[in-house]
Image (cartoon, rainbow, N blue to C red; front, side, top):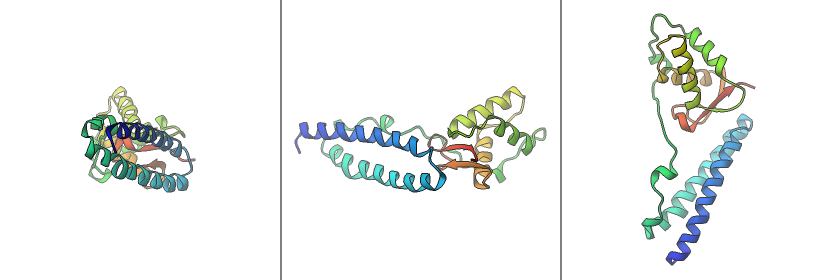
Amino acid sequence: MNREQAVRINDHLLDAYTALDQARMVIAALGKAERIELGDWLDEVVAALEDELLQPIYDQYPDLEPPKSDREPLVFTCELTWDEVRLPPSVTEQQVDEIIFSIMKPTWRKTAMMVTLVMDRCKELGLPIEGEMIAARLRLLSDTGRIEGIGDLRLWFDSEVRLKD
């Protein structure tokens, strides 16, 4: 392929990449079984788009590749698990849960947003709780079925949580 063809193909594939990202948000609003099934398929399609279509273009024309920051979402990870959390003596699990459930909605929200909102509320109440502690609690609540979570909750910008239906 010549450069002009590569530019045209690249432009269309980047449009498709954007459309797939928008589809991911719509899929997030579906029922759990559909979210899991379609989300897995979507991940495979995105991987194929990146690895088998875009990468060969970038191998031939490296200057066409967008900066990584333009194509990859921000990632904030937290490997802390709830059993590793040591709450300050003045804070109980029940208090943390009450704050989480008072802020959480039945609509999907990014885990990063929930961590920030809960952390802000804890600061208002004078509770010394860190974001990693909140993220670990959200993971436990999701794993035990008390809330719904989609995606890997360790990745705050790539996962979402909501109240159970």
